[in-house]
Image 1 (cartoon, rainbow over the protein chains, first blue to last red):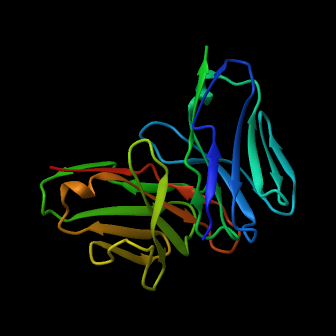
Image 2 (tube, each protein chain N blue to C red; image 1 turned 120 degrees about the horizontal axis):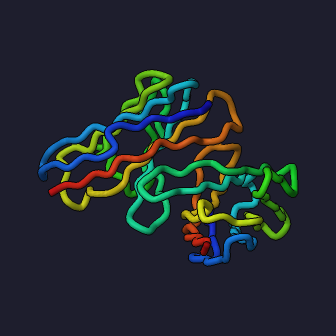
Length: 111
Length: 116
């Protein structure tokens, strides 16, 4: 089955700096890669996703890149703000079916 | 759009009690809903996939008689933890996707279950 690895497990950045979280997946058949933000005591919230037919997608301060050959994808957050502090999960699936999640990254943005 | 509501948000009950958790898609029809379990500071682990009008598909190691799933309509799936024990204490989260393929999964806000 699919295996998703995520790094780093914790990340602390100064407000205004950029944050990058990286994930690798094992199943070359996976073609859908969402990123979720989870705040304390809440469910994950979809923040951006990318499909295997594109290499990059951007939504304001958030961008995701995908390298299918290397089987890795990354989340980039620019101009970080304190409200970006949360746990971020990457995931991989085949056509939006069962999601396999990474282990999560706890992001802390220092004011 | 794409709002998933989960109820209750928190349950505290005695060992041996059965607990039902509801997951509703409020503004879309969900052919498929998923149930996850999350331990503190860990990732989400898929327990089962719930398909409207058919039996749920359980992941390896998940007891189907312990975790009963019913998906009777396109907007409601329920998870019943039967005869709950302290080791069943966890954060349970559901997700749903709109009908059709390649639709993102949207998550409820989870249910924190504490068994005394």
